[in-house]
Length: 212
Image 1 (tube, rainbow, N blue to C red):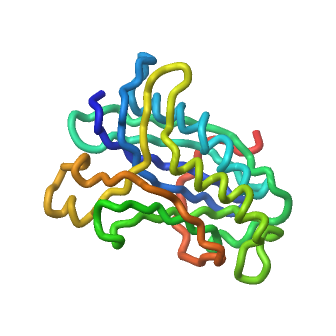
Image 2: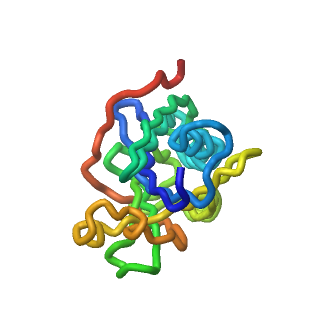
């Protein structure tokens, strides 16, 4: 594929009573030389990076990361890749209700701050919160490790594929339909909110077989 291609990534998480997903965007810095389709190469690299390590480290042990889907945005089209995974969370304790979770802001500096991104992570253990805030040690430890990993480039090993996290400007896309490269602003950091968030959860169709 071409340098600057933009991909949408969906990471599926299954809780005991519902399924949720995280949505992010990545831009290609260096094409893969693995012989795989770009969407598959990125999915593999993500699982080897934070999706398979830092993300499960903040989830309770009854939550599972169940899949990664990667779509290429714009033309020419590429077949999407869906990778089924089965990675459980590692923290003990019952999960918070699905509509209570951790908010991580994705910061960029090219467009106005209103274009900054945000992801919502459910499946946090009750033991990692006190009232409506998350425990300080939890925030300074595993959550901080995840925010650092999110801000780092995704690199294939030993192949040469390289992708960076970006934020898409919806306003730019409205004015320039299809120009995903122009709408992509480099993520300059990720920051976690210590206040337990609340939202109406968007559920996702079940994928894979958690615990199987």
